[in-house]
Amino acid sequence: MVNISFIGNEGLIKSLKSNLSSSVNVTVTSKADIIIVTVETLGDFNVLPKNFEKPALLCLNSNDQRIVQYIKNYNFSGIIPFSATKEQILNKISTLLSVQQTKTVNENELIKTKVLAKIDNIPPLPVIAQELLKLTRNDETSMKKIIDKIKTDQGISSKVLKLVNSPFYALKKEITSIDQAAILIGTSTIKNIVLSISIEEFYKKNFSLYGTTGGKLWEHSHHTATISELIARKLKMDTDSAYLAGLMHDIGKVVLVDFLVKEVKKPDDEKQQTGLTHSEVAAFVLEKWNIAKQIINSVLNHHTMTDNNFNIILYYANLIEKDVESRLELIKDLENRIKIDLTDLVNILEHFRVDHDDV
Image 1 (tube, rainbow, N blue to C red):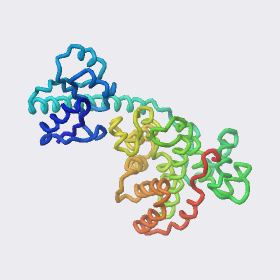
Image 2: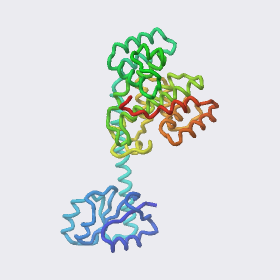
Image 3: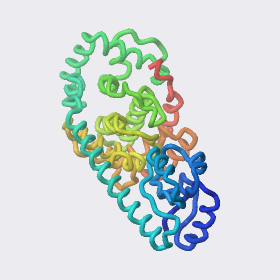
Image 4: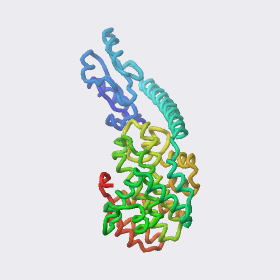
């Protein structure tokens, strides 16, 4: 049953409600599929907004030619005389909704095409990140070369040291060199920190329609990656891949944010506005960056519970990082599901939510 809201001449509204009551659901404008606007005199226009947020059908009960001039100032989707039968009104409503749905589908397809074009033109990962991704955990010789390269890049070095010295890593003394950091927290951790830093530039946008900032979104990704790495280590799974999946799971938002026009609360909101979710966009981006299929699959399904342990890692890591109030319950649920002790994770989480400016 179609949802209808009314605005305009109260007498006409009362008559129409009585006529249509058994065939439509009368509701408020925010929940309506269509608005019926009733007009009998020029004064009825005084209560009308200039623009309607839903398709608006003008139901007119007047022969006053002056009203025609007023009608031009409003974005009515259609006009029908008040004398029309119930069947005629319902048919008009059905036609308007069909046209609106077709228009929405066409607009979404156009936006979706633009999003895909944007993905195709997304910049490659920074060279340092590409080199790090080619390394294996046991490739100490190459890692030493990368460490040496990091030391020659003042910008990356200072960011690494800033992050290493933040409360997040809870080190007992200040670290003043990359070599010192590599000894204390390991070259693999340094590698992951540099990967995190290397994608930070992508988040320097306005993410207000996601209800956050670029800094906080990047921080969430970095923390999710760290949680994923720890869980993977407990499961004796590929920790580097788990870290990368956590780091990249929201990269799709970097693309989609340029096409949003309304606030997003959940992936369905993204789908409604652009035809794609951030998970789907992320999968396209990671494929373009030649990231491993296991990681792409995990990112694509990070809002869905599956039986795949690698996917489960990211699913829980994302929730644990975001949902502070339910964090301990989520960890307990994960412990029961995959039969591991995550006491270490509880301790690490105490250092999370460091102010991004400090990082």
